[in-house]
Amino acid sequence: MTAKTIVITGASCGIGAAAAKQLNAAGHEVIVVGRNPAKTKAVAEALGVASYLCDFERLTDVRRLAAALLRDYPRIDALFNNAGAWFDSFELTADGFERTIQVNHLAPALLTDLLRPAFSKGAVLVWTSSMAARWCGRFDPARIGVSDDAARAEFGTFKAYGASKLAASVYVGEFDRRYRDAGIFSVSIHPGTVATSFGANTDTLAGRLMRTRLAQAVLTSPVTAARKLTLFLDCDPEEVWTPGAYYQGRMPKLRRKVDNPLLGAEVWDRTWECLTPLFSGAAAGAG
Image 1 (spheres, rainbow, N blue to C red):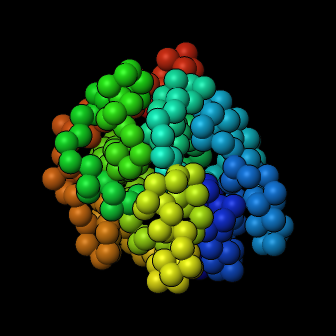
Image 2: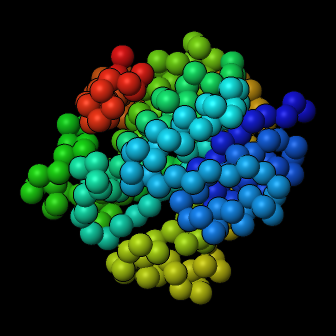
């Protein structure tokens, strides 16, 4: 087995930390990225690997992270876009976007694009998605990043979470159409309803239920969920799994949306309409 250089975001706990442990044990060079300094440091030190801090609620943090990774790792073989959050109220980030949309979609899209020059031939990008993407209902790409009064009702609580995960999964499909010929393979996956600290930012009924002892006992463990993500590294992306797809279980789902090039182009264009002005056209994805 050839050792790979793998970047994992959201790796200070839960699925990300479990994936880092599994991949490190398999002999890969793992780079741990997290928001919480103490937790990120603890995970990295336990594994003897490098760590970086990044808060996806600040896109300047994403730019700094990408610059540091490109400086330290000229070759990256895999990126796990695992960081994510669910909030129970509408709030704007300092960048002016609804924070769930930014953390779950805009920030990982920006990070992926900025790291693209370092991706090796055959690089695999795994995005942690959610079955909430399937519950989104009507989806208007033009509303991504909108912060007007209507957005407060439109993107409240779980609606924003579902919209952000659907936007990300459709974006993955479009990323695949644009970069598969360059040897970059992307996939998004719902790893199960996992017993982690996810939902700690929300006081909704669903969030409270997820934090109960009973729920934590019956939900998918972080170790099992991490295995579902890391499996995509161990097999041929064009023979065993479908690049660009959204997986829930063993089969691609959401195909009418994820496989739709018109919708994919709309999501792509709107994503970069949001991101490019913040960085004076420095983001390559705008092209």
